[in-house]
Image 1 (cartoon, rainbow, N blue to C red):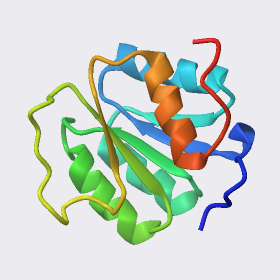
Image 2 (tube, rainbow, N blue to C red):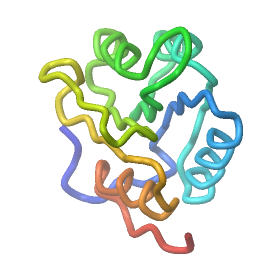
Image 3 (tube, rainbow, N blue to C red):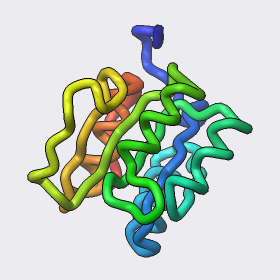
Length: 134
């Protein structure tokens, strides 16, 4: 579905759902500095209306959040926007995901991680350039 040639980061829209204010700002800033368009929210229930109203290429979500966890958010988002890719970020390395509970090809990035690793993983998902400068 995605072209083999590299994607332009400026064209890629990311929806970031992270309940920790500092982490959300930190991640959004790093992705924006790398050229991605980022919309961020503080909980899964705030992300759903945006997914219904707009088009995003990637849902980047924490797993453990109040009101609606990232797994439920990804499941609901997959119904609304089945072509949107999903990456989970979590501080709970031991979290295991049930088979079939997450969208196909969802990625998991365990905290702590370097911003370079985050950008590199997003780049890989869309086959864009290197995560230089971080």
